[in-house]
Image (cartoon, rainbow, N blue to C red; front, side, top):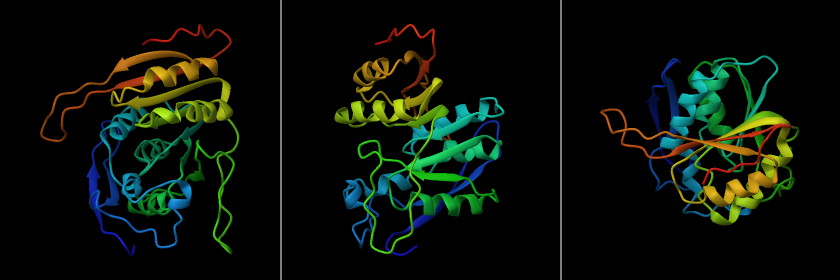
Length: 241
């Protein structure tokens, strides 16, 4: 993989076998010689974020390791990055599709599937700020976009941009079935109230669960919460602040 340095990390997840993840060496990596990332609005400063393991992603992966696999259920991960929750779910037999807008996410996903001896899984391009559009290089192969509707939509650390709440909630509304759930692990970034108001407009009620944990030999301390949204004919629309 030219232009940047990588490393391999073993990630233990309670309830499933350890996963070996190929990730970027650090936050200083960058390689976008053709401007593919820049065309998606990804600057050099944010370019490496997709290729790092984040605590909120590990928290979501741990929850997906405990969630029963339901026959016929379709799951979508948004902004998947290294797609740890998707890999955990895929290993357990769930029908999950990973999605991201970074041009290298699919390549890293394929590498990590091979590293863990997993069969291929679905990956789609998904950019909630630019839905349905992707400017491709001349002669490049067609790219699959996120389409259809899902029973469960998941994501971690998606609420970092206060201006993206409307677009993200709208994207979820377009791809969630009428009776559906949305799980987002948020490290208390402060934008959840605005996002939840936009989710309410999409018909989703909210339940919050703290996921705080103390530091130990394997992980630093964590503060955050699981935002569980549910949309159904009986959704009350109540939002927890």
